[in-house]
Image 1 (spheres, one colour):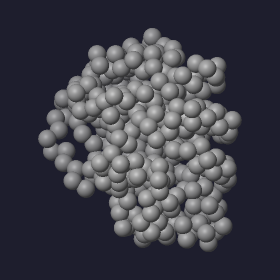
Image 2: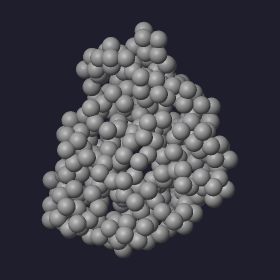
Image 3: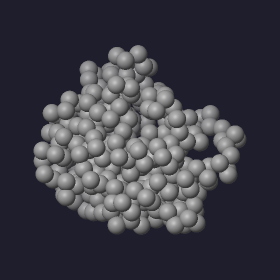
Length: 352
């Protein structure tokens, strides 16, 4: 599998990353370990987790459980030197630290807590899961209002947090830093502040990106290219929507939508499962069939055609789903299919 260097850092990772957000909830620990074994056998050495995982739903009592599951696997497998481990500190959330925003002291403590759960001496990529000033991720773009932000407070906060990341890097606790659910303006400012104070530059930004969600294609892509920041694309299958399993109103047992409904949620895949989203999915499935492609393999292969560095984060509730996904890795997307995808995107530019 090809290797990708994250931004301007010295951290090289596999071109595909395994996500773990269901481990400990929808995916039992033993199956999570089996998935990591399968991924490593396929050449995937990059594993992403977070202190707030598992999700769907996030519960106070399970905060940190996914990191613990990954840590148990690392401890028993003896594969740490073959792997790149990424994790994240949670932004303001009532489920974590009672909603307190992270600052220098909280970041330092959170890194130590993650290291302990992961049972390792270093984190290869440490990410800020949400900006403390707010975000337009997860459908908040439809009502986004940045008018109450304070630029100076934001810059001061960035300098404070970068101080903690710099100290952790010098201590060997982290190798590189990254962001998640951040905007183009935010990414640019993190880079500017890092340059000004001599802190670590952001090597990666983990934002949603798929055939159905291409907000990263313009301003964010420009910043990422010019500042040398790698996009880690989460939900490349639109939380399972692009698999087609929700066609015709289906809600399969064990699916993310079913789990969300069972916990009292709307079961709409974080706002992705809309009539337009379902229609767009059907159109992409027809396109894949016309070109003799599996739609899941097409959706992942398409990411490698982008004019900026992208590492898709793939995940699966069950091991058989991961096996199906792994079969299609490394298959190049033909130019005629790429162009057909771009034409179809113009018909369904913002399906949710």
